[in-house]
Image 1 (spheres, rainbow, N blue to C red):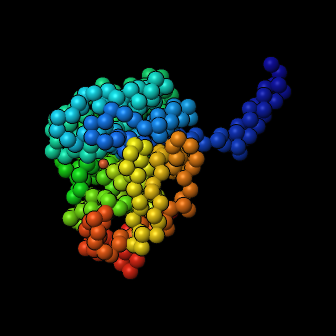
Image 2 (image 1 turned 30 degrees about the vertical axis):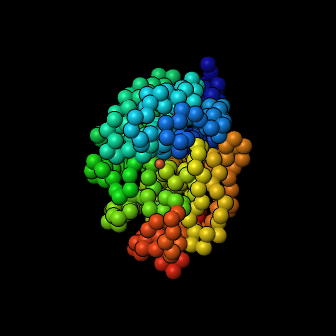
Image 3 (image 1 turned 90 degrees about the vertical axis):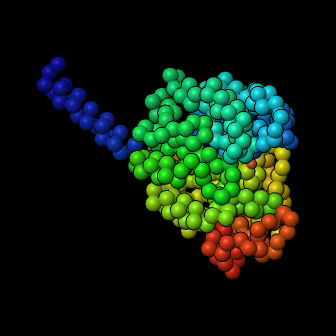
Length: 357
Ligand SMILES: [Fe+2]
């Protein structure tokens, strides 16, 4: 090659490099589905059309993983066929997802493995031991592998933390009101401290921090334990947790409190639709069955939307009340509402606890 040709080749290579630098490649997008409250009545082994349609859609829509915020089976009662119920769940949910290489990351609900229900907790633990979280890693690119977050204690499938690409996904064992057992707050702080630089931090579990719906107004993590709310929110704020996802309340809502964390109540897929809490009961519509689609990029920028099932139509945020607020009067579907702890209100005149996104 003549020296002129070498110079031309170098000029061409430099030109290509400059072109690449001025047009950075399109950022990679990750997609996670979040499913919740899929069960029916006690002992049921049936799953609704909404569950099957959601799984069918998730299988075909390019997701990288699926999270569950609990109540996958209908336990919390003695003498039920737990093994049979889990078999039914896996045949409707876990295995169809497995068949397309999609791992389900579980978190326990009160009907799966409630606090103090040792027999049910053993079934829950044994059944998910058969579905290790890294089972699809050999077939995935490096940035889509799901691995246990290094350097922290793991108690899969109860409370555990995994990394997938830019996301830290933390499952809580949150099946009962009144706080978190097993020193999970200490554990959570350890996880967040050691993985503080992960761009997107998501916590998911069954029980919400504060209530979203009538009939469950008294069932939330900070119930009779306002100190817990303060400590928990301090942690979320300190480590910049972007998302806290909960089940149990059976209704979709996305809201904020005084910190940067977005609180998202995951819609139900099974039976038991409920109404969102508003002081004047103005929002009387029952919640729709559906699931969440969480998308994010390498920088941790994220979006959350809810798709109704089986229609797969997006549930618009502006169809929800502008805030979740607690009625001042006590009633059978609003237990503890009159004396709801004042320090948990965002604004005590409106009695709001979450402001809609
Ligand atoms: Fe529940």
